[in-house]
Length: 338
Image 1 (cartoon, rainbow, N blue to C red):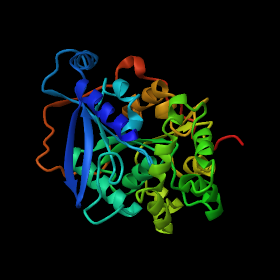
Image 2: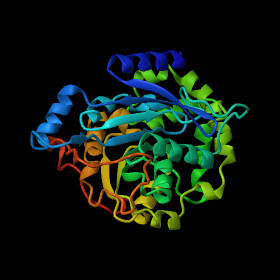
Image 3: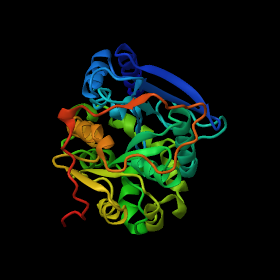
Image 4: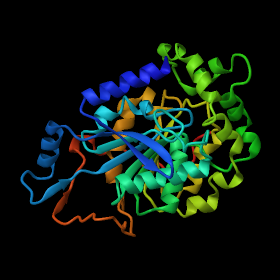
């Protein structure tokens, strides 16, 4: 049933002008959808840039990485808002959605997922991109920012996981993910969402089956200490970042939020009340507002230029974010209240 929904969504995306592609990266087959701004959006952006300009307006790229057990579909609700100002790319990571790991492998270990994400980003946006990630996707985005600042202009972390907390802090999370106890999926749904959508209950069996797949279960069991984000690793991140946190998240340890706020220097904090672990699903308009402002973060361009293959940039004009979307990002950069 879930596969049917995925097929329907991909058809709907193509009907709305998306282009779907598959590329080979390190033996994995990566499926992704690409959305360009509509003609009316381009006109508005050109007008916001001052009307007639010389050269071609640069349309910034925004890449959205999904979480563990999820797929590109998890961004379905925010894409219509985001394509107003971005070229939006939503990939399925290997083992999720339509993407496949290398032949003969059931899943990719976490470090290999990061490698594939890095090569994907370099392939589709050699001059760099804005990056957002939910849960595991935010964990991957942070790894990329530490490794390749030339590829990540700025990033939005949506209830990200990955901090090197105490092992006992992750025990309950692992119990929910592995879903070995009766009734765990009902608990998973309640803790994932502030107000679980009724339709989600129709897919609980599908979600349980997904959690049993090697790309989730074996990945969880294969995690090593080096896969987690250390304080030293976050200290190397110079990329401007905003932490978007659904305050009703009862899915991942709350220590994740405190870790990012305390250890990621200069991060801006955007709490989203009445929202659970996936702000892009429960609060898509608010989440889109924040993502549309990524280009307004200070020093949003990396100091080290990307070495783009054949990627000139002369004669281009920077594309502004539409004015009515500006000013909503709150710079809080503090630990959450306890």
